[in-house]
Length: 488
Image (cartoon, rainbow, N blue to C red; front, side, top):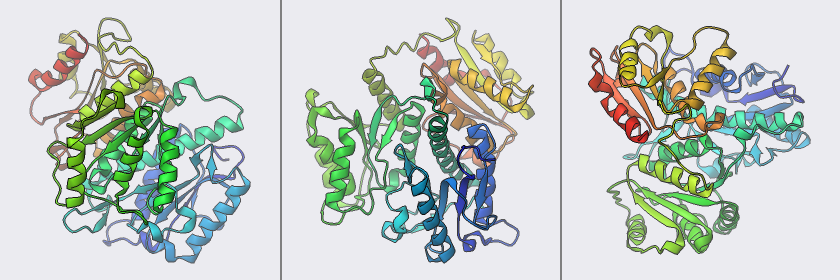
């Protein structure tokens, strides 16, 4: 039985068999790894089992709620894959369309880079989930291979979480319609934000900002892929999208980027100029990494023009050349102003005693005790995960702590990097489960055993503590200081 009523199956994963050939005899193929991780993660996010079929397991394409197309050079040459794609589109047109209330039912996973012009016509215009990275020195793409390289798993899982949460959003839309029920008020869209497309060097930043906005229940435009549009098509779409948005965010990187057909300006520059044309109607945040430099003369000229321009107060524009966390803080500030909310960060939702949710796995139960004692000595209320009861009960307790605690501290000791990615993502989505106040502090504590992914671990959003020796209260001093400042 499908999770979404009215469909035979919930999801069909369409892929080419060639893409599952292992690169090493002792390892599994990329598709096998993706399929296994996806099937494990999806029910954890949606809270129920879903019916998922794939090219390898299904003899025919069912009437499915959604399709995942794993795009690659072999995919676009495989007649069976193109037949699956065409068949899904034909069935979807009879069951609500390819977009349901502006939410896509096709999810384009790009395993191996393909120029947008080479994407099948049916997939053009749909957002892509890039499971590859571009080498800045050579300009060549390289797939994320988590089945071969453990260090790439956090980046792989970050992209997988984005995909699964977007599928979850589609399912919620479909379920709400089927049941004739309104979505819970805590999940209602609060604002529509235009998050401008950026260049490859800032893809990770773009993804982080997108998650931050989703955490705050914002609708995000553009909701189609802009690459491949000619100049007129692009300008028409961007004008309409900006007109629907409360404000726009523009990320400026070191590359000039794509130039649409029929224009000499980059995609980045066109979006910025169209937002400028709207004047005070469109508030803007423009962000560049600190000390941004470029070897492209066209991009250098664009960056210099932004730095030279004196924005008037009436234009509602802020130009930031700051670390990423300051951009996130600025976005939070704008969203609060837009909602006319009072941001009283010093007040705890539970009262005057500030609370810390210490997230850990049961295997680290002994290791976290010194941290618990340290936090309680500082007169914080310490909330701990629930390990008793069924999965639904434990999940409810976990989400309750995320909703109400003033700060979060994730302890990673004997747990793998995938566990850390999962818990970090839970924290990032606290606003999507009804959190009313911003977290005053959030940190990740990396403890022994010392592993490569821990030694190299960095985060723009979390305070990262690396302590592979015996615990000392000094290790938590920065986290405690931030929390106390936030709590007055």
